[in-house]
Length: 463
Image (cartoon, rainbow, N blue to C red; front, side, top):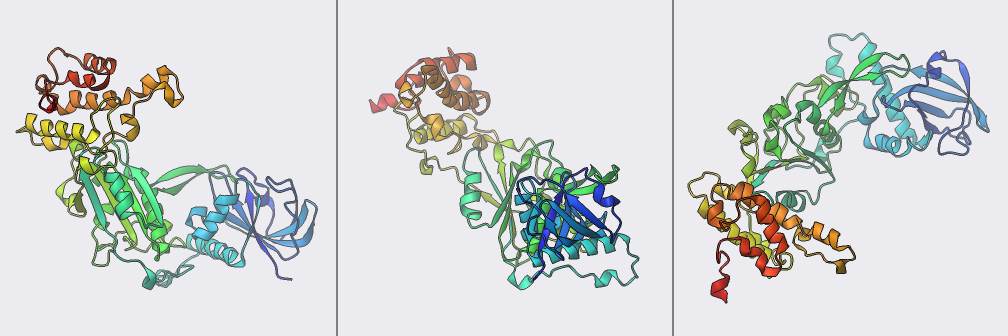
């Protein structure tokens, strides 16, 4: 009868296994979460990997079953223990995913012989790398626990930066044009407090469950995680999406990855960088000496509001590493173009087009006037819809939802787009945003637009 293989989830803080000498028998007897008969089926010669959960999340022990289990008791022997075992997230996806799927609900996880051997190979390699004395030529002879077939690698990786006015559909374009066939997507948002440590990874302290001592490990960020996945699965398309790239200090956030953004003809990184922490996460077995570069199946997309350029300016050296794509702001082609604004006869496309024309005309001479335009998707369909009690809500709830359009659009026009030309766009008797919004909300139908200067929409000519 062939032996079977298992992963035993050991909760952080359980140190009893470290007290057992190598080669010594131990009898385990415990109730296990999620399984009424957790040890049922365990037979002599079955193999078990001890996995430490909690903050550690690494493989630390190897056991072998000595006697078939009886009830909830089993005799096994500890054959190996390592304080330098591989982390869960450094393993191949099949191993990593089976642990992720079961570690919160089960304590004994059945695995295939191939998965067991992958774990053991990584445990041995990590132990050797950390503790074994190595000859000068050993580094050149390093072998990964598995090989990556570069012939299967998808080509065409690019860096694309989409820019345009707020609400013009940049994120929609990324998802529906560039990433619709992606096998995996990682999305991040840059902001003023976002750092290289958040994006790439950083050294963080962890408490060792066995010794109680503080140790420091590299915790991979979203960039390193998707880079690792893309490198180790060459036939799949991976997309990293960076929203609002200019709202953070992008060159500082990228750090030394900045140099790796250049691409060759196939979409691979044109240059390699030396970063041992990233290399240990990307290359199976923790090959820290191998240089890092972007694989051709990793696609990077970023979005930028042109009206936000005063937040963090992207310098020329950074921008030239991206294919720049302007997203056209065509309000008449948007999915909500013909939707009426609340209870009026004004369609969103007509309103936005007239406002955008005024923004250009009233801000002539200002270098950023076109960046102040209303985007085709500046509002949502729900912002335009006029709610009533017929929609199954109280009048108070309906009124609250109908605040969305004036609070979003009128506030933007007053505070930003027409900040210096309010008297030319709105009637002179509105000297505050509060009065403007109140007048709009208290009116009904087309009377709501009486807050604007006379006949700004050309209704007198129509009549």
